[in-house]
Amino acid sequence: MRQGILIICFCLIVAMVLVIPVQADLIAPAITHVYFEKNGTPYHHPVHYSVKCYGYPISYPPVTRAVGSYQQELVFIYSATCLDYGCEIYKPYYYKAHIDRCDLEGSTLGSPFQIHNFSFKPYTQCSWIPHRTYRAPGLWNEQYFMTPEFQLCGDYQRNQSGRAEHRTFVSCDPFTQSGCVHMIQDMTPIRQEGNTTAIKVDLSANHTDLQQYIQYLETCDPRKDPSCGGWMINGEPLKGMHQYRTFLENATHIKDHPCDTFLVKVDPGLIIPMTEDKIPYRYGCVGPCNQSEAVCESRFTIPSGNMNATSSGNFTSVQQKIPLEADSAQNLTTASQSIPPAVHRSPVESLYCDVLRFFGATC
Image (tube, rainbow, N blue to C red; front, side, top):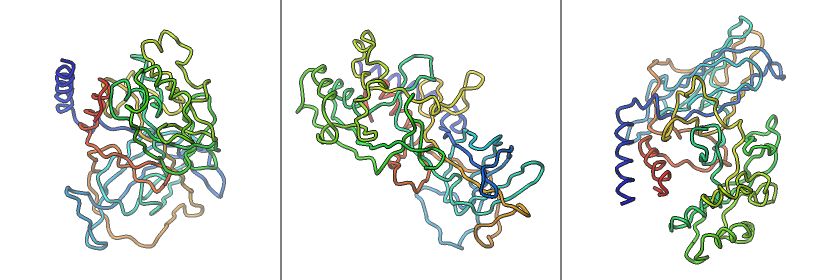
């Protein structure tokens, strides 16, 4: 019966999605911190700029084109205004293309400038934000990290195969270290060290009672027990930092939602502010939400003198076309090894997976 209700609900939601333009409703923006410098120092004046990236569109099945065999096209563009050093913008890096180069055109204090070929991606670097959930209906600014213990507990509760991850974080300085993010509310900024390690857990080999399993998760040490998923922060398991576990002391809530004991609250800086009671981008959300996929950085140096800088020689002529958009909001390309590989899904597939998770199932 429950499965039948799930299928009916999913069909209704998919039907609604299919009649809504994908470009407007199934795109997740990133939170990008933009830093302009000039003469080696932070630049504190307003800058209006546009980033344009050139290459060729990717078709399916994808075909790699040889260098020089095609004419570069405009495949991605965005414009923004940065009022001060380290401003935040909310833009979706949403494209289906091979990018050869990105250029920047800007103006500040009435003077235009250009930066040619600053990168082969429209940002400097990005860090993926771990999965989050909501626990207060209607309060979209209250988000909680789905920690590995929370995921293992939920899998056990649903009698599913266990899967989790190990991630190691260290404290850092967001102004001098890339990938340094205010992740958890009231905690200092942290960044991931090394790669994410995925683990599979045989839940049937542990305990038969949910409360006993929760007690096991409370005490197991992810540094020593391979079947114990967890995040390590400065050498200490996150679950041991009780001050960050929002629901731990709420006996009434924990009684109804026992696995929520392992949730920790997301720092407000990772939550995109809503404007006019809505946000123009939604990605796999049942109802309105302000979910973001990544925290990114863009660092630019405003050239001195003629205000025109070039990173590499001459370019071929460019045929401009309307920017293309991807079938997945997770086409953020990055060279940072601290970011786990993304699972590429179409917007409908992602929505399907979110709906399943909403009803306690998984893809």
